[in-house]
Image (tube, rainbow, N blue to C red; front, side, top):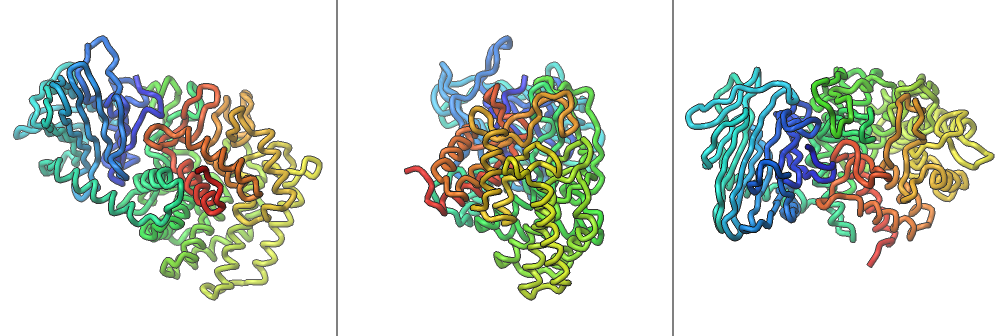
Length: 600
């Protein structure tokens, strides 16, 4: 049985990622890319769907013991797990080296004290647990083959097969180091090179140490910021610069529910805000790579801008259900692909334009096509900003005039006007200033409830929406505007959980809510960080700091956050780890640091 979501650690090589549970089980790994089929899919099913457990040997009828402690080695993605057993202490180091050949997952067992019996149990299942591969020996190496895929298993330990699983039983004493590696290669190619675990470990540590040194943030929340930055870097697909929203699919927003989506793609919104956080903390190379990815993905067709693409810019992300997987804690269906890819979400134009604007303002070398793209996006918005859309939350109900979408259309026009005013682009300045004023007036007239002194989710509605918290952050209205303060206070009253965290919008357990889906969801962590940010902006800095530090306490022991927090079950829910949670963590830390609002 899979662990709780917060029981998992992330390791990765910036092309794919694995989740390692506290008991030493790898329950999720897609090879060779984030969006490839899973080789280990036990996270969304059972052990029959693939896993790799490495830890102290235990009785067959007992649950495998959880590590006594675990940590990342310094500022890296190298995971160390230690078990204290009656026979001694043992350490397992897990990592995926940044790739210059075949993708590898390396696990090194080290004896610390005593003599500890250990067991490796490796059950590879291709195609999300559906296909049992042909496992055999090839020149002394173990290889599993099915269709286009082959996974090679290398270790000095003696192995044997039983019940379609590859085992190794061995004992470690102080100073012993035994390595295990799996490597992926297309099945029609020659075997991958033999792994060099110790050299790869050193190279991986060096990579992360060197990367972290570029961080320009040195404030009181540095530990949380650095861990979030490393997580965002791990979610970047290095060959193209695309950034996935999360490395998982179908981890539920409500345990046992149907709100289960595939996040292994590049949402323009998520990637744009990730880019902004990286830029604000000194990471220009990632910003440049993402801008190039964007230009390739959008190509010459900005009028048909999608809200998300594949990590190499693919447009077709057809959604399907994997009926053979029961889902995480029986949360079905398990989905791959994402049918929201072709929704109309007008806010995306604002997020992309804001990211390009920030890149320009922080000195990223000018790219003429990026400026041309920005102008084309505004020409599209000229004709479409006043249409209803599906909005930031990808509702599967009817389209509406979402206030946040209109605000972000305003942002797109505003930032493009600034680009023209700077002399770095040409465009109909007066015409677009009028357009900016028209959008602003429309939102303030149709999206604002005078009686309650709050903006609403959509024109004519009474519902609130936490995306309204971005109004002051985007500069649509100043923080001291009474309408902004009223909106913040209304969201606190109507969308807060008893713990003070923020819901995206009311679902209220309705049979079918505003988003066209049944059931509830947890508190949305990004929205809760936005609330802390807004409270700081309106001068309630102590309250902002307390909320922020309360949010930090929700991270797991390794500093990782999923998409949401279940206020009833008191656990993380949703895909994990989630870029859309770690980005506002960074942004709020920067704001609180600038305001001096932090504890001693």
